Length: 235
Ligand code: GLN
Image (cartoon, rainbow, N blue to C red; front, side):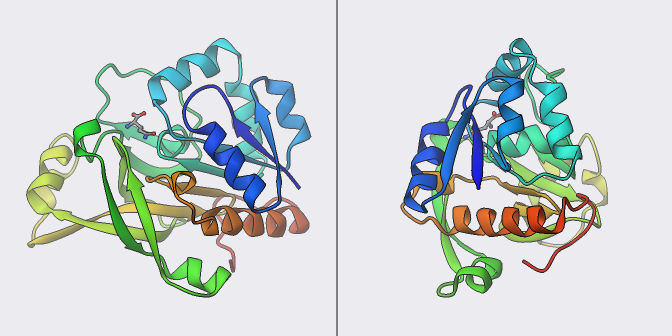
């Protein structure tokens, strides 16, 4: 299996290193035709506006959309998640072109600026199911986005508690008024068929379980023929 890594900007080298550690061939993708030679694709973290401008410059969007819409396995981390979300809010400039496909609303800078970057332990039952061992994993959040709402075809793999005031403040332009109660959660890892997305950076830790999870997911999808991104799977 050859796993492409979009290598325009951001943490693509770290993803390639993680793929080497799990014994899978990683391929740098910078041109549309390079997508033809890969079985799955990782879109790394970085800065989504810059990455989108570079993707546009290299005419990558039509091929990236086709890859996702054909049901091929795709994993977006952080800025990669933003690339895959159907709706992105919280952008300073707006109007960037992204890929879409993942039925959710992401806030691009939900957790704040570089200074508010943090690490935390997350509970991810799915990882233990696939890999055995611990349910917990370390989440490295850097200028991180969060998913505020997701459609019915989306499986939540990990969420994170946030204050209700924080959630209301970012949702004032959408559905903030409707929220009641005292606690809230945002989604930080999710899957919709062939699309996996994490708001944090597994490639910046020594834990390769997310890469193993993605490769297993990809092999299953490719063995079955592509799955539609609106179908759930056993993994
Ligand atoms: N919030 C950033 C953006 O809008 C993503 C940060 C990251 O990928 N570490 O692109």
